[in-house]
Length: 267
Image (cartoon, rainbow, N blue to C red):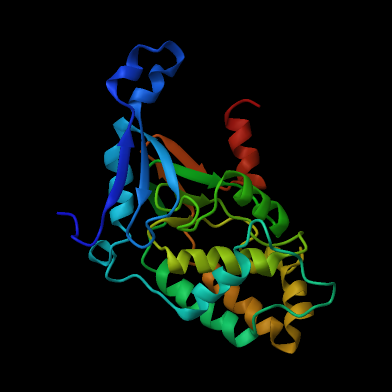
């Protein structure tokens, strides 16, 4: 039963459009908007066949449908408000300390670990879902993708589409802390809609060598090493793989594992 406080606005093309050649497709689509908090909120076109899925996603915003064990923290919301700015985010000047203190990052890690402990090693997810590959600290590229294709926020498309990140959030890029802090904060804030897998760079042996530890030390000062260890403690709880609708297998394979997979295919 839907909450009395929750409504969805739906309009569909009438049957008179069905015989207008190229416009016939509009008879199978609907406009869906979320009126739960903002009557002027964003509208989305969805297939009439998927209208039930869209409405169920909107209902998940109602507290009645919220997971009782979800974790909401002020630090996660603060990280998202500072870092999730696809069209307006600008990089910090060279040598500038990170926006959040070591204490705040440890708190974020603690809450992220609490959420991830509840997840299985193999995630079984459904569609529609967006899948993001290696980010490697290329935070400006991630913001451009969000600006172009929608962002994981209620002002974006989070109510209609889930998000899956395949790992390799750190190392190599210039904004590793921004990247890992945002994806962890999104996981804490939206545990049932944002999903994170573990890549081969989410291990201390790799990210100590390829730059993540160095960035923690450079931007967080003497406490950087302790924060780096906290991040790696979280990484140990990340799921390894996911399936989408029991048809698509998602995993971050690298090094010898990827080589064996290529060999098995005769490549």
